[in-house]
Amino acid sequence: MQDEVLIVGGGVAGCAVSIALARKGRRVTLIEREPTPRHKVCGEFLSGEALEDLHALGIDVAALGAVPIDYVRLAAARRAAEAPLPFHAASLTRKALDTALIAEAIAAGVSVERGRGVQSLSRTTTNLWQATLDDGTSYEAPTAFLATGKHDLRGHGRPKDPHQWVAFKMYYRLSPAQTADLKDASELTLYSGGYGGIQPVEDGIANFCSVVKQRYFARAGLRWESLIAKMQQDCPHLAMRLDGAEPLLDKPIAITHIPYGYIRRTTEDGLYCVGDQAAVIPSFTGDGISIALHTARRAAAAYLAAEPAPVFQTKLRSAMLPQMRLAEFAANGLNNSLARAVLPFCLRVWPGAMRVTARLTRVTQPAAVAPQAFAN
Image 1 (spheres, rainbow, N blue to C red):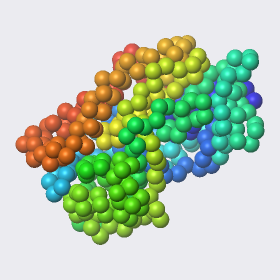
Image 2: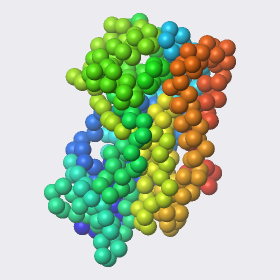
Image 3: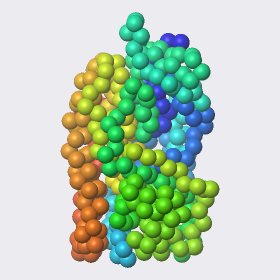
Image 4: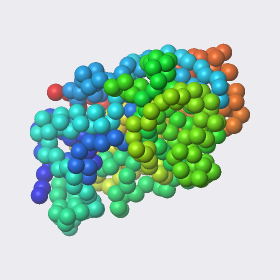
């Protein structure tokens, strides 16, 4: 089967590109391996930039139950510091967001193939991109977008994660007192082997998403129950927050080997890489969804302007490099034992530091990228 555009991956970035191109009259096929949207390892924080992009895509996050987030809170050991965010933000589960994006893509005229795993994406002798599915069928198009998120596709892998990060996600129903205390804040908790974020999402529940070094997980016996106990021991503030909490999943969702700090240098002609396939920012910034939308916007604009994929990828890297490097530097600082000990005290003296860090680690939209790329 042949179309104008082939998109591999139906998450935030893949759906955003598909909607943008279909609204401009392009014939688009989107292939997603999951039959229905599901929960994913994601902090589910929607920054101001993400909210603007989602609004342009026709997604009403408030109607989906998104919770406003007005404050950022940093906790290490028993200390915590809080500061108002320098932009509007919200929190919404990926399952709800992905469901809305898929529906919007279908409404825009995208041909969506769900429950279809792509085994390979390669060039044909006629210079088309061919996606071969797990059942042997294939789709072809002159242009393809790679949007498979944290999962690599054979032949298009990213460098291995040198730090061996492992990420976990669990939903909790907090006690009434803890729910009221957390309220409209995104809370970052620090411990010796990594960090975690907890914040309210729709339906009165809380999302706890954490990343730890493999060796830290190993010291906990490679068991979630021991790991969450160890994190609470290292950070009593987290133990206080989860006191009386009810876990809502039978077991946490997990993913390994996340290449934080990765930015794609180049790509092949006709293959635009977006979302985590373009750049993977440290999770503590809460900018992952924003980057997915940002790279999708820029890729759609580049394609519509007939900008070759290698040129687009190089420009994208240059534009994102300063924020990515700053975020990586800050993430490394969070894993320094001295920093964990003194940071909450320092931030109580200067809480504006959190506001500055939050602003500087945003991947903002350059003025050269027309917002009409997502417009109706």
